[in-house]
Length: 562
Image (cartoon, rainbow, N blue to C red; front, side):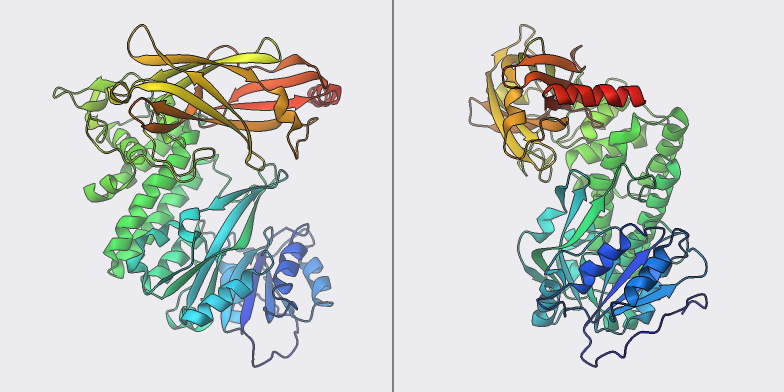
């Protein structure tokens, strides 16, 4: 154990001890008590957890004192104080793991919580199947809106038992350590621990070490972890603080370590799955933001990415979904950042491939006329496109072509219009015959569906697209159940294109035109309606909508404060 630790005296532990929950905290006096209490409350009588071990990583804001005060009233809480801050999450978790006495152990961050029933659900599954690892669903809760976004939902739709992760390589996509219950003897017997010190993405490495040991793993559909996402916090979490290119460098280094761990253990299937996960998830996430970064960031990011992707095997590239492998091939083929708008749109979910649509000497689709070596495999007529996206809001898991739909909002009155242009894609849409498009509006905070707008499509005169117009009445959005009419609410828009041959294609909308600004419109019920079409980070069209005179005063006051 770290010599700097000062364990506080705790009660004698029962020989029937089952689950130890390790909570790590650094300068989080505001939230840590909620995390600890959520662990102590597990079970019908709060008896599923025998001990909570809280590790204070040398906080300076009173976190340690808050934990000590709580321990005086909670006999199952033990507090460890580190003498020096570790600079990461791995060391304090290791401290807690070494101090744990339960048969099983879980990890919890100080700004998150365990929902009721989380530990009993995992413990029951682990016992029933004699599995050293049990995993459950996690949701990312956006605060203060309290919007829940499932994490890797495909892995947790139904219960499953895997005798070895080799039989379920998709498990590498869940890199979290906190939504899982581990048999402590399994971890200690295989010497599985987190990287020590100032190591970011330590959970990537820990999870790889678990998978490399090939345990039986059981999964449950129960939500067992609530990951709080506070984007407005003064101190961003590692996963959110991506403005410095060092964050990308650390992520790549962690991924390289993952590949090395799995490779050294002979888990070739998991190595390929981990490489594909990097393309489908990590690469797309950072490319979506690349156009918002400065030139120095872009240049270094591009070189770091090229160097890393150069180590990938062709089979690993081909195993990724089409948007991800096309992105990778563009980076590999170019020595400097290029085509950032097209890359951003393609990295979105769902991806959109912007024109122009070039072809190579053999007529096959390619990225551009000056980059013919980047073939867009899967887009030629007759090819099967594997551009499926997981649970796109309003679309679900519907397989999609990376179709581009331009949307130009014109808001002159309370009932504006949305002009649409659906671009052909190497003849794929022309062959299907688009006839109409349905637009689904969805409130981002709680995924509440709004009205569905439908437009007939007609061929454009140039033969490369189809156009249509929908009436856009945004006032009803502020009157739906759960509405907060005085506060601007974001609404996302997704589309479904229906074709004459029965094909249905899901797509996002690209915001275009001069109408992307806030408008104050008349409203029959609430006098005024504030509507702002805008472009998301990924280039999609979205709306912020509020109504009533109060909303106008609030926005004006915010501007004055700035």
